[in-house]
Image 1 (cartoon, rainbow, N blue to C red):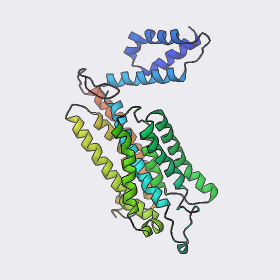
Image 2: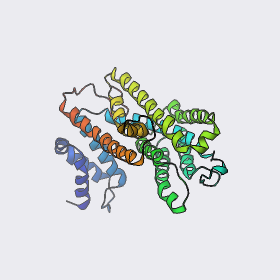
Image 3: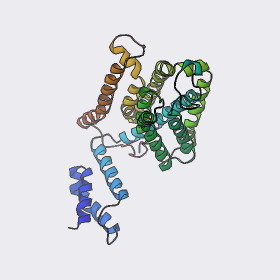
Image 4: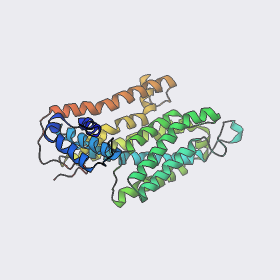
Length: 326
């Protein structure tokens, strides 16, 4: 056995045991036939293809082939939310507080956040023009830049957006990395429409609200409102799909639970001490964020385990790519 064959067999571990026994030799043989004479390692494309195929087979064995279409639906909704928020934050950054208030600024902007929000808006444009790989790359760049705001602000001693703005934006961006490669024209243009609507709404607010109360204006009406809107849309889609025996909406809701919880971090944290919508203190925010970050992702494997135990029909099965029933 060659090193290349051994490494392909290791990657084949992504598939269920029975599937490996019945078709493992055939799969590895196909990859070996296509390999270069001097090749010693599986290519990145082959490795990704094997992992994706193994995941699909495991989901099919668990009766959860709707999961992948659900992840893609969640990615579309997360991207819409993230770009709409970026539009509102961009306008906020363009309205610093009056100089007499003594609030620090980053030049003509409220904080360093303007750089990250600009890349998020660029992602909406890229999504309309070139969905797929280029959109995912731009979203990844936006997520990395959003994360980098924290150390960058500390290094240059300039203000940045608060963490309860940055953390849900990063969570939405991570989900948005699952955007499908091909979409009709209307969903491709939807982020630009969301950006325009969010920008128009934010522009009508009083300039003083933007400059003097960044944290309060952000925490109370916008983030929880976005959480409620995202949850409502997700549940409506889940109910609509469920009427056709399609559970992708349910999986999308489970995937989005963590971003939705982080968007609603302020009221959830404030509810701990019974003060409702009052801005919570740092310790409450941190503790609530940790709970959301642990519980939300844990619900998905629990749902998969439960689905595996429940009886399910093998047909008609939805397409693992688009979710359509054959």
